[in-house]
Length: 107
Image (tube, rainbow, N blue to C red; front, side, top):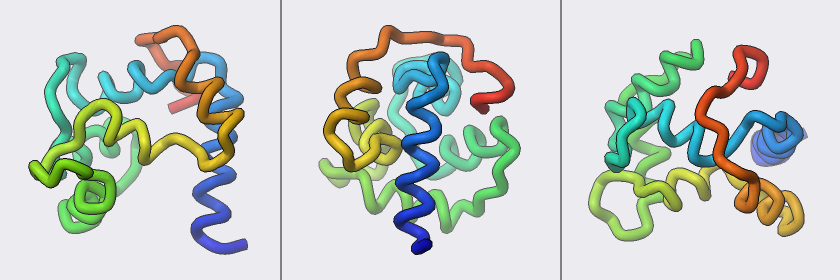
């Protein structure tokens, strides 16, 4: 399977975790503020999840999803990096009531 296929599968797996919400994961990366996420915040957020990510890799994510080109990800720009392509799954996750505490298993 391709990298894109694996990534899409991982996104769909997250949707099946009832405690995974866009607001909850965004808050993990912003430190529970409404700030926008830059590459250094991405690195810190990934470290909280036990994922190693270089500043260069984080900058690639910012560059890919930063639609207004301000160097940081808004809530929806960040969310787009997590949403699967499939419309029904996207809609389900977007409508899910915010859960702020994400379980260890989901993390």
